[in-house]
Image 1 (tube, rainbow, N blue to C red):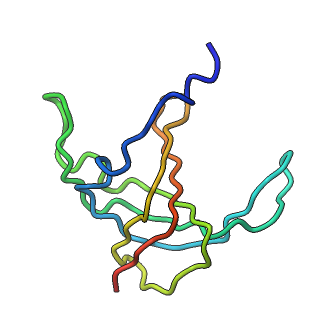
Image 2 (cartoon, one colour):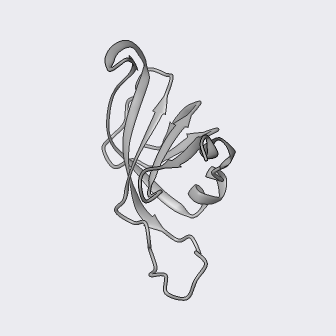
Length: 116
C-alpha cells in the first residue's frame, strides 16, 4: 500500500512533555527542488535531549530512554540569539516519523522559545 504515512499522526505534546531539550547549534534551512537548493525557508536548530522522564509502555524500557538523541527542528523564522546548551521549547510543533526502522523524527514548529 502507498501513502500510509499520511494517516499517521505524531503526538508532539505528549512526546516532548517530559523531555528536557537543549539547543546546540543552528543553520539556515533551505528548500530543495529536484535536488537543487532553492530559497532559504528559515532556521534549522540542532538540539539534543538532555533528559527523558517519559514513561514508556513495556517492562523492558530503560530510564532516560531517549537522552542523548539529536533532534533538528525547522522554523520559518530568523535565528534567535542563545547560549549553547540553553533549554529550548518548540511553539506549535508538528512531526512525522520516517526511516526504514521508523526511528527518525522530522520536526517543524511555528517558532522556538529559548531560555537564557
